[in-house]
Each structure stands twice: as C-alpha cells, then as structure tokens.
Image 1 (tube, each protein chain N blue to C red):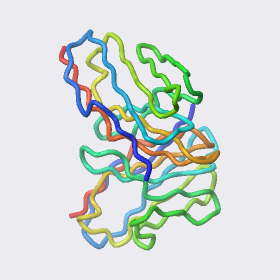
Image 2: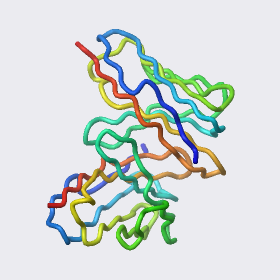
Image 3: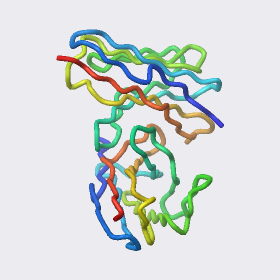
Length: 112
Length: 113
C-alpha cells in the first residue's frame, strides 16, 4: 500500500534554532498536509499544499510541495519552547476525495 | 473556522461496557467523517470512513460489529465501542471534512479496566 517516509523520527534542538523535516513517497500525492499534535490532543492543521512546487508560510513555518509530487518539507524558523510536539505529514492520493495517509511523525524537543 | 468537537475526552469503564464517542463539526457541514485509533508513540490509523446517511466503510482488520459508526447528520458522527475489553484501550480521534483537508477533534482516551 501507500507509504509516507517521514524523517527525522525525533529532534532535540536549542531554542532559536531552525528545524527542517521532510516526507517522501514512492507514489504521487495530490495534496500534502502538515499537522502538529500535542500530547493528549488531536492533530491541528498547520499548512495545506495543493499544487506541485507550492511554497506556503504560516508564521515561522514554511512548507513546500515537491515538484515531483512525491515529497514535502516543513521548516520551522527560530524555534521556541511551545514548538514542542509531534509533527505529522499527511498526503492525499487517489480521486477527488482521495485517501489520506500519515507519516510516522517527527517528535520535536526544544531546550530553552 | 473548521472546528471539530469530540466528546468525551476521557473515559474509564469496566470490561464489557459499551462506550459511545461523539464527533461534531461545529461551524461547517461535514460530508465525510473519519475515525482513527492511535497507540502510544505511533501515528494515526484509519479505522473507518463515514458519509452522512450511508453505512461506514471500514478498513481491513477493523471489526464493524465491534466498532459501530452512525453518521446521522452532516454535523454528527458517533463511534460506539461495543462490549469493550482492555485491548480496546486506546486514543480514538475523529476528523471531519468537506473534501480536503480533514480537521480533527481533540481525541478520546478510552481506558478499559
């Protein structure tokens, strides 16, 4: 079946550092999404990407939909303690409604 | 916008009890609602997809008689875990959409004693 390979699995960084994580797939995706999940809560949508090559920002977050439609990255600039959490990439493939699958997540820890 | 409310947020009950979880889209009409299960330190696993007024479509390996899904309106879907046992303990999360993307509720932590 479809799979998303998300890396890194975890990151330990100092406050103020920039962060980069990515997802790749062997299949083409129609849409890429990036979610953040805090402990005991549901995922919150950060950025949605709908076109190949699209680069979108949301505050200190920037994400890009790869030109091949098989990858996406998420960058966080100048990290702060509240950025701690698990970040999931997710992608839609298939028809108009499509099927959504998730990467395994990147756990981000930020040292003040 | 796109707020999804899930209730209850935490349930502890005895083995054999049936538990109902509600998922509501508060500010939009959700054509489709989804139910996920998440084990500790793992990603979300889709259990079933439901469209309003239709029978839910269950993923392979998910028992439809165990996990009853009702999607009676465009703003409400319910998941009932019937005769729950300790192995059903998990974090259950719903999501709702009008196409793309999906918006998630805050999850329900289910603990079966």
